[in-house]
Length: 234
Image (cartoon, rainbow, N blue to C red; front, side, top):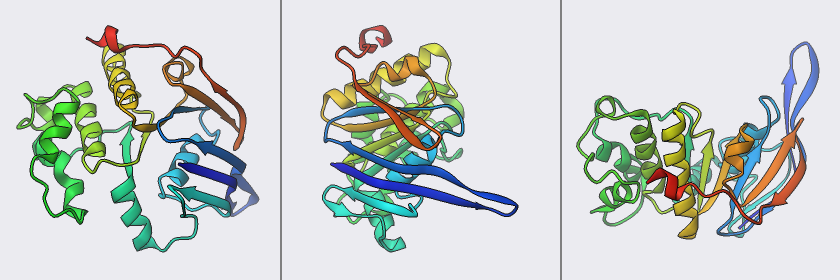
């Protein structure tokens, strides 16, 4: 589903040597995988996620997504692919404060070319266990519930790829377990997920862990028995 070949991202510095935030990264992600990208602050993990999500362009290398070379697309084509094929979940929930959970979830549909939106937002909220909170605004929801709304928003267009950048970073331990349980459930249903984190314990709940350091992938391991939190979260 995803092939990165020799991807580098280089940032110029006014008074110093350029910084290679990504340095010759090659990575293959198959459909249905649950991959954690683990690294310390400044290791390049968020830059890698931004490249995967077409939020940033590599300076070198080739990126193939679902059979299409996307590394050099025009801006409008990038936006089209992001809307159709990629869902994003961030550490900050990025919800509009004066709109309901349902309205927040339905926002990506405004940029979709679907003929009908009926029921899509409701089904996405039901999938994350918020059927009874659709008419609530963010201020009426807990942090964990707000992140569930953000996940539902990422799912509403039924993307091929779900990218999560430190999605439990603003949550307490109990809410973090609930969110991890949702991601595991989505993956069990066939969703491809890339989960960016600095937390090795969280990464252990994924099926595969790639470690990044100084812009390079330094380890890539498939886990025989990922930790399961679904039962805990219930």
